Image 1: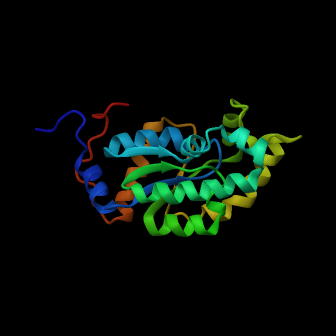
Image 2: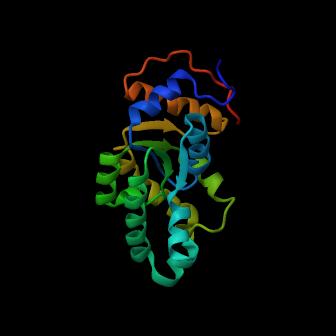
Length: 202
């Protein structure tokens, strides 16, 4: 008998196909990588890790403080090391920082040890979301809105190299999660067998 929190057949098949790989969410700040990632991990019965949280734990200070004290290059170096370490711990769902995949070595590691999903959000959606927080070091500029647009323009072509792309938009998180599971199933050649939605805790 199917338990309330038991993964449906499609979810279980996705996890089996992953093997030791991680599902790695990439995209801009505000795309929803952490919130979607937590729910995706719960649906699949996997652990969730947030690379930014792990970087802060390793450094013993916030990302904003790392930027202020040491600069972006120092942060990016630590970020690459932390992500490389985390990728050894799959299967799991991992959320990465917006600039993480600009490092070609990190991209290569993610390709080798993970399946990447780009949460692709429009500029207007991102701007509305990032305005809710004041701890974005990359946006501590004279014109944060223009900085966000520039970063999106610079990074979009790199994000587009992800294995899968899901549109991040103003829809329920569980809708985005279901689309991600469907895309993963397609990626692995899994037929949608009786995927049970709404049986797991939201």
